[in-house]
Image 1 (tube, rainbow, N blue to C red):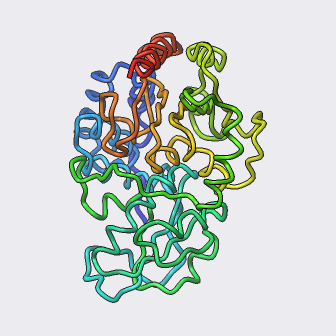
Image 2: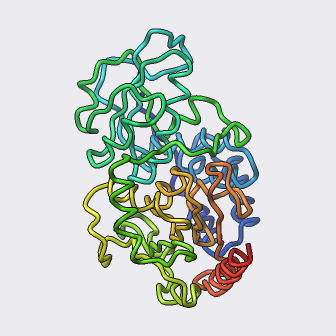
Length: 341
């Protein structure tokens, strides 16, 4: 990657106005600012990065991903370049080649993008994956993955090419219609059986097995916007039994991601904020209801309650800043509808 120079557009006050408009749900204004910035500062990587969300909201996944990638030049997206003499993959013939898919971002981002290992394997590559150590055993079972290494050891893996995982869909030139929302994670059989036995006493024979997760890593940017009143979600369940998936307060002996997947795979429904557990549950094919703030993560930028990223996801969107009542009402109604089935 070559060094690039910042431009004056990176410091435009319009960027602050655009972010504020998005947080208020004023998306037409945010999109208008994106177009204005593009016209004024076409070389601004920061402006392009902010435009990504609006491109995706309008149905342009690849254009949005291309804009997201420009955020790398201003430290707003992904990790710094890998210390390697090998090139980034740029659509070369992969038959018989070794490709390193380098995971990056939070654990949720790693889970989102591991799905693309099979796309590169389908092109003939042997795909090695680097990831956070807790996810190594999980990712080793993903279709298309030939080997797994801890993230810090990525540069020592033999490879002919490498791909930053948060850029994988862009490298593959995918649009929304090309995404495969079917399950791609799996559980260890012994973990599934262990948790089936442990969870059995918590639910009656006819109960819907529900798990709740309330918040993610508080260190993530804008995480506070994803927080909702926990008791209001619990109230929306009525008298239905549920298990707590929040590691900080759960009474379940969850000690690893294998445990987490074992629990999730034994549930009928997971209700959560936008967290790594949301992505793990959805990637397992478990029905997953996600409460998303008015300005959601780019994965959920496309309007609607369904997502091409996961077939098993239903989105319950905040409609007014700081107010979750309508989302909780929608969840309560959806649970009543499920009870009728």
